[in-house]
Image (cartoon, rainbow, N blue to C red; front, side, top):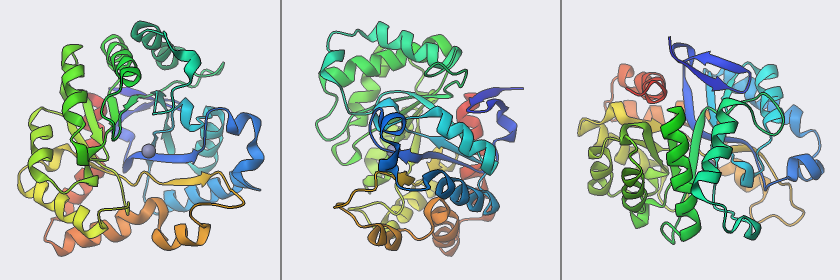
Length: 314
Ligand SMILES: [Zn+2]
């Protein structure tokens, strides 16, 4: 029996159920939930728990929370939300894109030791452990600072066997660079997923990634720049090409964020863009795929079998 770390302790991979592989419960910046919790809005925990309870009733069993320290990770918040809603939550270790200047000179091995400690002992003076490693690169490609983190993540993976998720800028094919570095570090690419892969419709690039052995996170729904329907058509093309077993649909949604007085996107606009939150895939994307002729068994395996296999290393 294989187990992975959830925020409430080890869970059997066979019991993960319907799993969303890249979401955020609460997204902000490092230290915000611990220091300026009022920025998350009044009653944010009630909103979070009520939302997750509806999500559980809607058939979602597990959420991988892709919130690193620099995105405002707070594992005690995740644990409370999991306990009260019944949704399994998997926390991550690693880093996103915000690199504080005082970390200049911290080596890949030093980062690896931090990440390993968060997997084996616990995060932020708790015994809550990470179940997945994360590294990130965006439009600029793999920057020198991001390369150090990526190598740290690779080394932590090699010591702990914890799988890796990569925030990646798919329109610029940044996955090619990220995989080359992981390969240099001796990582088995079957333990890696390239996230935000549905920000492009370039099936040739996506097929190349799949041929390297990795999983694809089709985890921006409804997303921006590429329409939801175009995203689903790309997913269908990959299913037809024989890669259904390597695709991991998710939303990259966050139910709690900084409630700004002059927000870039109003809460109403946000709600209008995705009225279903973490249930958008079940309600909209699966309906589109059914219409395109994808069998029910395939739909189920995308979000049940594939996450399990990813964590088990199949
Ligand atoms: Zn994300």
